[in-house]
Image (tube, rainbow, N blue to C red; front, side, top):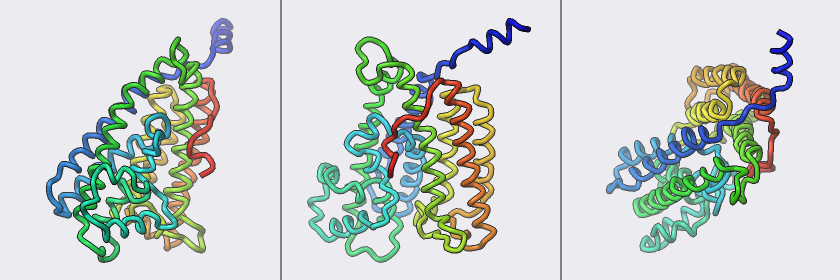
Amino acid sequence: MRILFLSLALAGPVAADTAAVVRDHARPGYAAFDEAAGRLADIDSCDTETLRSAFQATYDAWLAVEHLHLGPAEDEGRSLAILFWPDPKRLGAKAQTALLVGDPAALTTEAMAQQSVAARGLAGLERLLYPAETLPADPCPLIEATANDLSRAAAVLDNEWGGFGDLLMTAGQPGNDRYLSEKEATQALFTQLATGLEFVADRRIGRPLGTFDKPRPDLAEGIASGRALANITLSLKALRDLALRLDPDSAKTQAAFDHAIGLSETLNDPLLDHITDPQAWLKLEILQQAIRATRDTAIAEIGPALGVELGFNSQDGD
């Protein structure tokens, strides 16, 4: 028995399964997003219902990898071009209005790639497919250009995660100048987990939650397309999968995730507009607390198990 205790005391951090994150989480997630965005762009129609269904599927697919703010997703601001939210100054709507009343012939895939990230991607498509007010011109040319631009970005991400995934999996090996040690790659992935949870708690919930006396359901993400609560739930499920790939033995973290996801799935408030009622507001705050507790649990359990702490993330300081 003393030998067992001594062995446990001398045991070092477990190795993060970086290959599992790349092989079973990131690469299939980006491939699914590429496929969904491609189906959306291939729709040769401006039928709203058909486009909305494909849009919803593409949004779902993006949330499976949206938390990975590293590598190809950060190059050239691609993640922002795919989903620019929040947009408190309504920059996207203003830019889209200018495009709608401009020359439709200029709405090419190449031209869209040069437009403001606020006017592109999923947020841009949501405003066109679920308009809050009458649009100033026929949206079909802009819808087509935006969908094609989104599909192009998705294809680039899917392709470039081949090489980038290799860099993560060969961290510390000769010739890898991006990640000089296995620990550096592990820290980068672990940071995505923690900051992803922080984003869900502080932005996806914190913005509409506001204060008890002044909730702001109008600030929720995806309310036009009915996705406010769904985005929270899907994000949590994607982050739980990341945590499981990083450390399959993180039982406390998985239990914390299951608790938070259970709360989210039972809210029955798709638009989060019920939070003007005090009881509904408190339920959303309880979910926010559960997500923050999940982050704390992951930091306390997975971080030491892998021998890493939080590193810099592109979302820090937003």
